[in-house]
Amino acid sequence: MNEESQKTGPTRRVVLESGAAAGFFLATGLPAAGQQMPTARDHDDDAGTRVVDPAEFTLNVNLRNYSVVVDPRTTLLDALRNHLDLTGSKKGCDHGQCGACTVLVDGQRINSCLTLAVMHDGDTITTIEGLAKGADLHPMQAAFIEHDGFQCGYCTPGQICSAVGMLQEAAAGWPSHVSETLSSPSVSLTDAEIRERMSGNICRCSAYPNIVAAIRDAAGEV
Image (tube, rainbow, N blue to C red):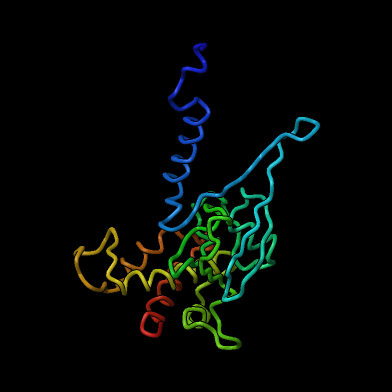
């Protein structure tokens, strides 16, 4: 028996793959409980080029099921925009820093540019296109119009989705960095609370005062 065949510990490849997966979790906070990592399979073609087999799964977006076949490395944002033609979610920084791509997954807001589409098979995804009920705007959408909470409008879909998720978090008593207590069953939505909770969404037109006013207005209606 040679030295190589006597090795029983993890190989260098396994260690590197595990490290990469751990880094992804640290960067994105995903996958959450119940979610699975993509099961990508790759191989070399006749020309020696590495080929990744597409992943087939179902995305439930705005209460409609979509059968999706994409490269397993496709982000949720790119799947929405490039494969489902749901272009309301915007690609801003593509690094999770501007919030323009914010959508709701199972009611919680996330940056869709930081998560892979294949990880959301079975989740309930809501984009800006799914907030209105036919011709009836979501109260947050109506409040943004009422208070002119937009200028160029590029960040507005992400702002509105984030605001809807933020109100649910506050109603559930989730504290923020500026909350006075950590154990209150609900949170009073002061301007400071709103600004802190919306700090992940950037508006380069500086429509912040109107956005805060719109959220405070909608808080009693959502």
